[in-house]
Amino acid sequence: MSHFDFWPPTLSHHMTLPETSLWFNLEASAIRYPHKPCVVFYDAALTYAEVRREAERLAGFLQSQCGVRRGDRVGLYMQNSPQFVIGFHAILRADAMVVLINPMNLTAEVDHILRDSGATVLLAAQELFPRIEPLLGSSVKDVVVACYSDHIGAAAEDAPDFVAAPRQPIAAPGVTLWRDAVAAGPAPGPHLAGPDDRCVMPYTSGTTGHPKGCIHTHRNVMATAVALALWHSGHQDDCALAVLPFFHVTGLQNSMTAPIFSGATIVILPRWNRDVAAKWIQRHRVTLVTAVPTMLVDLLSSPDVDRWDLSSIRVIGGGGAAMPEAIAQKLKDLCGLTYVEGYGLSETMAPSHINPGHRTKKQCLGIPILDTESRVVDPKTLAELPPGQVGEIVIRGPQVFQGYWNKPEANAACFVDIDGKTFFRSGDLGRVDEDGYFFMVDRLKRMINCAGFKIWPAEVESMLYGHPAVHEAAVIARKDPRRGEVAKAVIALKPSARTQGVSVEDLARWAKDNMAAYKVPAVFEIVDSLPKSATGKILWRVLQEQEDRS
Image (cartoon, rainbow, N blue to C red; front, side):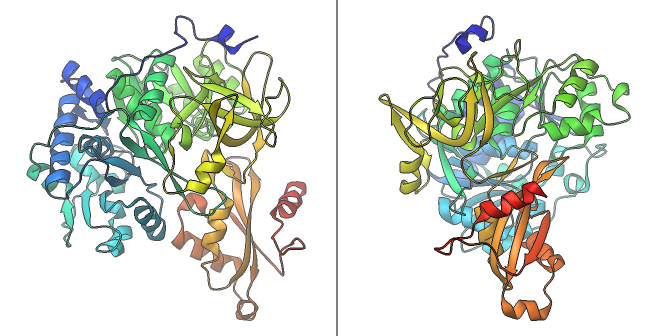
C-alpha cells in the first residue's frame, strides 16, 4: 500500500507555496486581523498590528543605525518572548537572515556562531548580556538588548524572575536598549527579499565537533510553515501554546511561523512549567500544543491533572523522542487526544514526516508530508530497501536546506543523487512498513537525544579538551528514565592532574561554566586510559557497549 492511502482526508497531495518572503505572512495577518492578539505573554497581549509596527520600527533601526543590508546575517539570542517574535520578523523585514542562537549557549559557543556566520549585529535578551559583553568590539559590533518585562503587565502572575526583572541601564559602545531602538527606528526601506533569498540559519552540530549553520531560504521555511497549517487544519481562531524553544526549528515552525501564517494567537511560555501551562491552556482555550514527550509525562503525572480543563485542545503532537505507550494511552483516556508524532531535522526546517491525525501509529515518525519524498536506502550502495529492512532515511522536498554555511565538504557528503533526484542524507537509520509509515531504528551518526535536545558527542568532547587536566575524552549515551538519554563523559587525566587529585566534581563544575546546560554530561567517570584501535583512534563504541550492558 502507499502512504497516500492514509493521507489526511480533504487535504491535497500538493501545496502551492506563496511567492513571497516569510515577512509577508505577518504583514498579511496584520492587515486581515489588526486588532486580534498575535502574542499573549503572562496575560499581556500584543495585537497583530502592534507586532507588525514594532517589527518595522526595529527593522528601520537595524538598517539605518546598524547598517544591515540585504543578505546580511543578524543573530537572535533570547528565550521565547514577544521580543523574539518581533525581532525575528524585524530581521526579515530588513532583508537579512536570522541566525538562531540557543539561549543556553555560553560565551565561547556564541562567539563561534557569530564568527562562523559573520553576524556582527545581535538582538539579545537582558539576562544573557553578560555572556556577550566580552565579545563587544570583536565578534559583535552592534547589540540591541531586550527586556522581557517591557511586554508584561505590572502585576503579571506566574512570571519568573528573569521575565519580571526591570529594564537595566546597560550602556556600552555599540549597545542600544530595545525600547530606544524601537523609538528611534525610522521607517524601513522597501522590502526586497523574495522566496529565494536567505531567511533563517539554525545551527546544528555533528561528527566534526563544531556547530554548522543550515542555510534556509524563505521558500524552505515557508514550506513547513504552510504544510503544518494545512496538515492540522489551522485557522485564524486557533490558539497555540508556544513552549518548545523558538530557536529550535520544531518550536519555531509549529508554534510561531505556522500560527502567524494562519492568523492564530500564540500564548508564549519561555520555560516549561506544567502548572502554568495547564492554567494557560484552560484560560486561553488553547487548541494547538506542540510538546516533547517529557513535558507530557510531567503534565500527566501531576496530582492536579484531573482538575484542569484541557478540553479545548484539538491537536497535540511533537517529536524529538518516541512517546512512551503508557503516556500516550493516559493522554487518550484523560483528554481523548492522540499524540501526533512527527520527524524532522534542522536541515529540513522541522517536519519531513508527520502521522496523519486520523490514523496515527505509536512510536512512529509518520509519512512524508506535502511534496516530500523519502526513502530508506542502503547506506553504502544507496539502493532503495523493501519494507521492513533497516537503512538510512533520505529526504527530498521544498523544506530541505541549501547546504551548510561555508562547509563544502559536509555538503558534498550530505547530498546524493538517486534516480536523477537529489536527496538529503539524514544520518538516521529507519525502516518503512507496508503502509508507507516510517520508523526510527538507530542513528548512523553519533548523537545523544536528551529530552528532544540533540547532543553531539564530538562537540562535547572537543569542549572537554579545553580543560587543562583532560588528556583524553569520550562521550557516550546513558539511558535515563525521564529524559530518554543523557551524556556520560569518560575521561583520562593528564599525569600531572592525577597527582593533583582532580575529581569528577571538578570536571562537572568546569563543564557547567563552559557549555550550555543541556550539553553538560550528567555523569563523569575518570579512567586510567581509553580503549583505542591499532591506529590510536578512541573506540567509543566499546565504551558504549560496556555502558549498555551495565
